[in-house]
Length: 222
Image 1 (cartoon, rainbow, N blue to C red):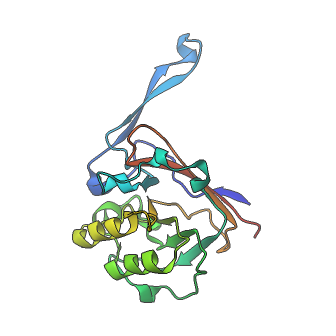
Image 2: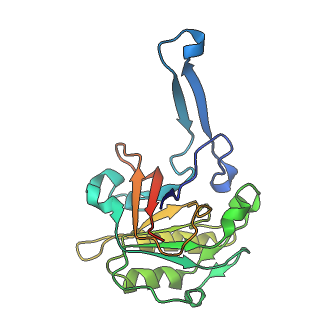
Image 3: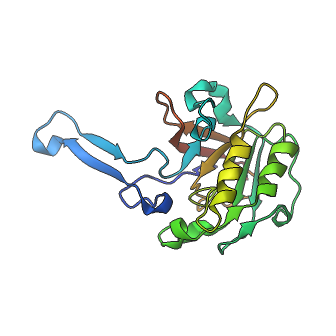
C-alpha cells in the first residue's frame, strides 16, 4: 500500500496562530482561449500545511533544506507511535507505551488531534511536547533524522517557551551532533496499519530555505 501522509494545500488550510494564508489564483485558462492552464500560488508564510522545519529556522548558522543530500529524504526505518492525546496538554516520555528501535530514522507521532483540523482549537489550543521529551529523542536515538506529528506546530499557545526550547533542542547541530528535522501538520487519516516500511519526504526546495511545505509518501506491505 502506498499512501500520502500530507494534507493538500487549499485556501482553508489552517495556519499557526491563524495568522497566514495560502491562495491559488488562475493565471491562464484553456476555457478562456489560452494555450494552457496555469496558476499563481501565494504563501504568506513558508510554514503552512504539512511542512518541515530546518535548523536555519531557529539558528542563523543552521543548515538549510537544500544543504541536505537527496538521501536525507528517504527513511527506511520508520516507527509510528500512537499517543492518543485528544486534549491540549503536555506530552511526556511516559506517554510512549511501546519500544522504539534505537536505529529508527523517522518517528511519527499520532496524537489524534488531526480530527480537530477544521476547528479553532487546532491552531489555538493543542498539545505540546515536554522539554524532557525532546531531550530524550535527541540523546537516545542517534540515527533519528526526523520526527512528524499531527498538530499544527511543536509550539503550542499553552506553553510557547517549551515549544521554542524543543525546536532548538531537536534542530541543534554541530560536528558531533546531527539535527532532527521537524514535520508539522502530518495527516494520518489514511493510515490503516501501524507498520510503515518506508517514507519519502519531499520538500519544496528554494534558496535560503528555513522550512517548506512537503509531500510525504508512505509505503506499507500491511
